[in-house]
Length: 393
Image 1: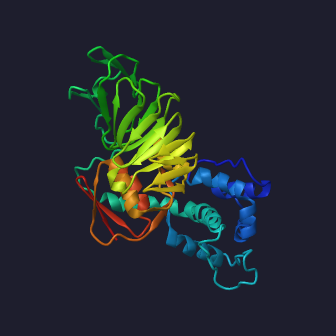
Image 2: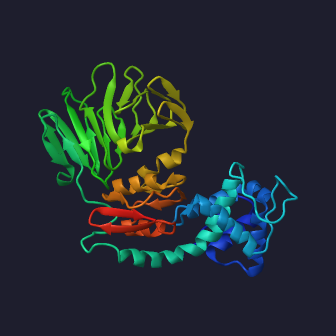
């Protein structure tokens, strides 16, 4: 692993030890000191600022681990180093480490020990996995980070315009003028009211600015239909797939997003809507402000899906717009759906889908082979045939 990580938060001693471990500069005595520190769950919980700081930097890298593997690896780390795990829940407990999934500290230990102690050593082995995987790829496969399909603008008369072919130009539809510059489509206020649709292919994101100043970011394999100029009481758009909205405030004219299932009403706010049909329900996540989904009001940090309100990890919900895959707590099928939409491959399962959950983040600028080589650290194997991605145990 290359690069030097700097920890900016937390207790000075643990920060120094964690930084030294990541940078490979610890002495044997310091390694023992770090292991002893992390084996005490009270220490871990009391110093989460320092641990979270380095995890935030390092978990964005390649290591991914299955939920079932976490416990086993922590067990092996502690036993291999002959250091007993001290818990605050049962200080007399001896022998095998007992992991309590419901305990608040479980995720702390998992992050600290698995990411910092295990991930550091396992990642270099991914190059061998990648070599093995390449041998299973058909010669015609083009392993590029993104597909090269064009974003399409469908005008009110049905004409389709490939936006990649009209960069830095204005698009005219009657008296309507639309600017297409720097990867953003901008609609100016006009008396012309017709409906346009912007559609993204797999592997491509796109931004547009509506006539009221609302900014929309479309994820891959998504679309938005909207009026070229808002008139009437409400500002109404309709989406498929996924989109992030920064809505221009106008209390007199509520902004409404329609999906195949839900209707989201806002006055001015930032929120994300995931309405891919294959995701089995529309998920609306609120980052800022207030929205009403059907008849339910959300506050920041909440999401609405399948008629239920739930707390949500906003950073994870918005990771896509920052060009990141965030697979934390995702099962295999959820991971594969994201990969299918981004790399334009069709997923084929040849066996019973393993029950597993993944933890970790990866950049969307990685190639498909790089992504799969990391995922193959789990008990899953991949083979690429044309546009088919075959998944097996």
